[in-house]
Length: 430
Ligand SMILES: NC(=O)c1ccc[n+]([C@@H]2O[C@H](COP(=O)([O-])OP(=O)(O)OC[C@H]3O[C@@H](n4cnc5c(N)ncnc54)[C@H](O)[C@@H]3O)[C@@H](O)[C@H]2O)c1
Ligand SMILES: N[C@H](CO)Cc1c[nH]c[nH+]1
Ligand SMILES: [Zn+2]
Image (cartoon, rainbow, N blue to C red):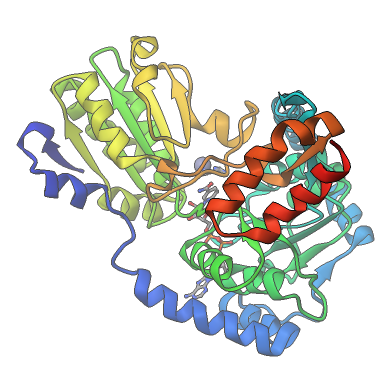
């Protein structure tokens, strides 16, 4: 892992360091635009052709139904069922706390305004399944969708080599009461949910993480269709901010946990202590050899780096510019610096809080903004699955009170029909 000294970096060098996945974006955009156009024109036939090309499987049907889901779910190990259930309960508990309760407000006498929450009716959940199948993502998306009360939940995941889904995904489907999982992955799944095909219904909003193809497809359909997206949730990343109280073994384990997601993942160590920094890098080199996915992790680590800083405050400055998906404060002094966090998707405090806990089971959502989108987006939550509609009611007293103000403002904008909508009421309610 290459190491930089923060106080020796120019501003341009810092911006260069924090930019990710920028080089390949144009190439990926072209490929994804072609995939979207194919799905739009040829529906299920295109999906089957892409499954054959990218997932190396010939599909007879486009989904796995209730009966097959039950059979697959039945066959998984008991301890896994229990672990999934614990995760389900914690994620549900945390997301239940996000139900909005807002008061009605009388903004002026006789004028009452409020907001009411309505679920987005048709949502599409993308469950990644390329290099690793992620049933945990199904929990992260399915639980808030169910709590919100979304009427139609369409689920897509890449077909496995046997033309089916794995048993753990099936078990989650059963827990959530979802009766169909569509066999579509990558950009083509996103296109299918945005345009609809013979089998896959068009949805109002698409959720879920994925590789650069999935993320690019979401970004494109967001501006070319009326289907919204949760956020750009692309290749995983972590920034560990450590000091002399950090444990290099834990730091390295956390860096590798995100590195093993994909060759394009990034793991950044920002450290105030040269010794801890060097020990952590040595630990990365040691621990990586024990990983089954060491080839993938090694590519991600080659695409990662460490930064030596003078203080935790300087480290936090760098972190805020980087805006990591995950920020780990590997320091006993974490409580002194949390208020300095401006940009991060999800934060893990202290030496005993591994990021993996949030990936699976502590309760927070693991679908989070990457590539510095944490500067402007939040991770998935119950809010992501609802709209908040504003309401207002104006009484006779209210229109007498507020009417003249509206008339004047409509007048200065030259919008006389607007003014008149008030005037006709005022003349009837003197
Ligand atoms: N940000 C988050 O919240 C978050 C959460 C979980 C996972 N992730 C990320 O999700 C990603 C999952 O990626 P994955 O690849 O394992 O699964 P994936 O399901 O995102 O992608 C697999 C699909 O990609 C398509 N594909 C593969 N090669 C292609 C090519 N050359 N051209 C066009 N399409 C192609 C195929 O259709 C395949 O089905 C990882 O990068 C992981 O880090 C992010
Ligand atoms: N770390 C991923 C988000 O970037 C989520 C995940 C799923 N499974 C394991 N990890
Ligand atoms: Zn992870």
